[in-house]
Length: 116
Image 1 (cartoon, one colour):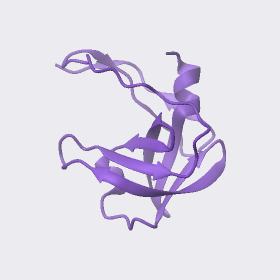
Image 2: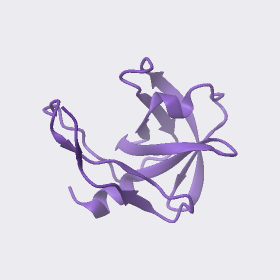
Image 3: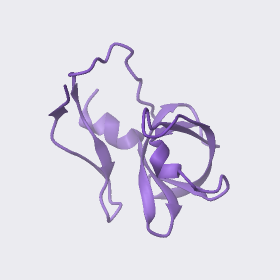
């Protein structure tokens, strides 16, 4: 997987005028994001921005805060790239974080970080 693949599978999750986060397409019509991004958002008040277009999203599942801090969203879009998650990730493995810039121009990558 390279940067270009991650960029095209990254979405902006908007839950309010100044409230947003990042998500990734992980299956057709499904987006993985952080639970804190959608915490308190009405199920009909979530917008996903992808390829400069807006789509309505709804919450399918939320995992407890503060850990693992995951939420799964559903949108009515099926023709998009996906990021396959790997089941062998372990504590201490090198990870990358992707997100939207404030201008929403495109996704950017932060430097690699390792957590022990």
